[in-house]
Amino acid sequence: MQVLVDSSVWIDYFRGNGNTDRLDYLIDENIIAVNDLILAELIPFLKIKREHKLITLLSSVTNLELNIIWDQILEFQYQCLKKGINGVGIPDLIIAQNAIQNRCDLYSLDKHFELMEDVFKLTLHKVIITRSLRAMILWWFAPQKPGIASVRGQSRFCCVLCGYVTDLGDT
Image (cartoon, rainbow, N blue to C red; front, side, top):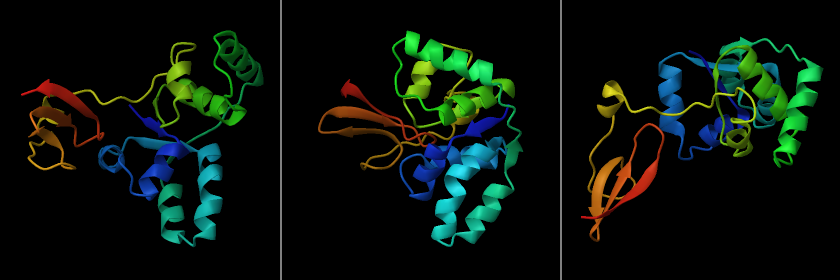
């Protein structure tokens, strides 16, 4: 299954923030996709920064064709407003529509996509811990490293793939 990677994830990735391992995994699995709208959000800034290699690499990613059905976009916006989900821009509704049309997961850091997931048949990319992924979870004894650690009597879990961190309670 392909994963449509939103510009918010790419920007976070280029900045070297917390989700690099997760996107690296999707890239290694060769299941990432973009569309022309996502590229239009990214490439102008990359051109200003003279990041020609990144532009070439992004252009080589699977590009899902946009087939905008405006009546459906209007319905999506109506349903969002009806459910109290305000401030969703038309570009994000088009990205959601594109993911639905191509039956792929959407990977975004924008929180409004989580709200839209239940409004229409949008599937967000989530890390599912399987046997192979469990092998990628590391044990650690210093902060900022993936795994499980005990710090001042508190256990903390951190997943190497997605950077997910949670306190497990007293040890």
